[in-house]
Length: 266
Image (tube, rainbow, N blue to C red; front, side, top):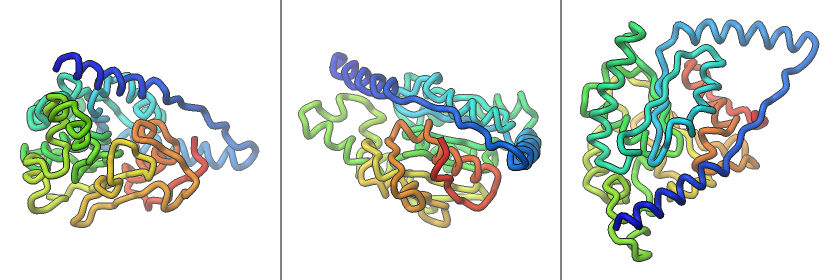
């Protein structure tokens, strides 16, 4: 069983190493001046906004989320990265309790009443459990999920089908399977409790969240499908934390701006 867990982990880590980022050049002339002024104003506003916690996913080592954290810092946000305990293999509810303690540490260190959560994959479920059942509803201003299997994923179910047992013994995987008791409890009642602003971001090419629409929330959440605005944009599950178009949605959601994905961002 341990060997199977190692193989699952190794495959995911290898996938992480395949992603890369690129820099985008600034326009020249008067447009550059206007862009610089707008960017300065945006960074000033971000500096006084809620601190942002980037919540990683299964096998999501902190360094894998440094690219999106660096973008947020460049835009003026106070940012920290939360790596799930035991890399997210354990009970999602236990990870949510640990996140609760971390949020309180960030609030104490910054003096902020609330934080904003930018979450990826399993991290979105951890964060939702925290908000819904552990008092986070009064400590979170905005919740954003990138490729989170809110209603489960049949990729988790298929692990057993191909002969690796019940998710190769990984508890979090079992909880992310469609029809799990964990998801039944998490999705009971209101998907979007309290005054939290809820946004989900998903992509047609997500190889780990299937069906893709299982990454959405009901009850007034803003659900963004990248390809609805940018049909030629190809973004995978891990790519959501690196992709410029996805980041443009993150930035707009954090700023409370209308969602207009930038299809040409890199």
